[in-house]
Image (cartoon, rainbow, N blue to C red; front, side, top):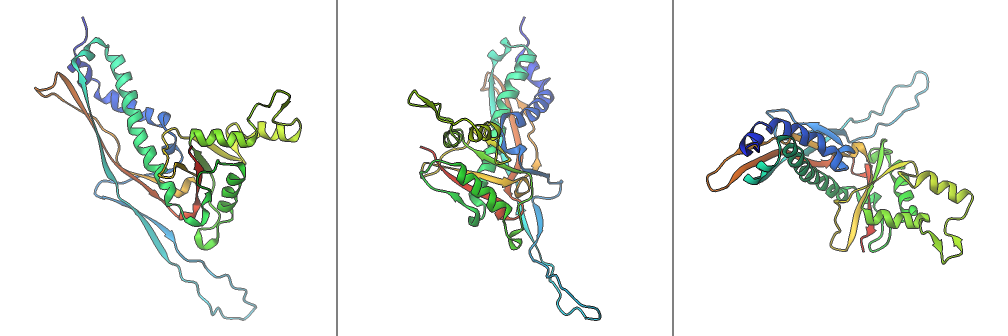
Length: 292
């Protein structure tokens, strides 16, 4: 005899919540690469302070008085969470599944949906990085030269804009952009049917060393949830972990309901969070790459 749907779901809500939260980091990339902060109860937003001035270093000689003082200025970035909700209707036919199978299937499905929402929120912030570090060209495939330029700009960032971007740095691109980048690196098989595209020697060794999961020493991640913009480009990015924040006021919860006009059980999951540029906008570099 099959378990009843109501018993399966009602008794398993806590297990589903824990399973879903644990699965989210395995479903998407971005929440793992940014700074997270929990907003305490009683607050509806978080203010991230940062220094907005540069001190002057003096060179006094013996007996000299200090005549120049530096102003210590603070500014802040405010991130206010946004409510998120998903409602799922499970038909009575779910009684055909055991409790364990139901937990696994529902948790996996919800984790993908909830993780994707966090992920797309964060990748949308790529367009908000300072224009001074923008690289790449519309309708043009990504090349190693563009990635190299992005890395250099982050490390050469001026003191007035926060100084060199703190490590770790990450580079996030779409699967198509990744394919084009690998082609630029030489992953084209053979030319005609005679000689390998990658010449033996130093070039071959370098490509084998860094193109698998790191590029120029920076971890490279593909994000399959990224979408093209109006120009059919992907807005990718290289950024410092400290440049982006995911501010969470309430993590995903779950409640069950039964209504007379639906044959089955309704699940409702609610969360409250938002993303934003955490510190200096030039700690991230927007990378434009062709999406065609």
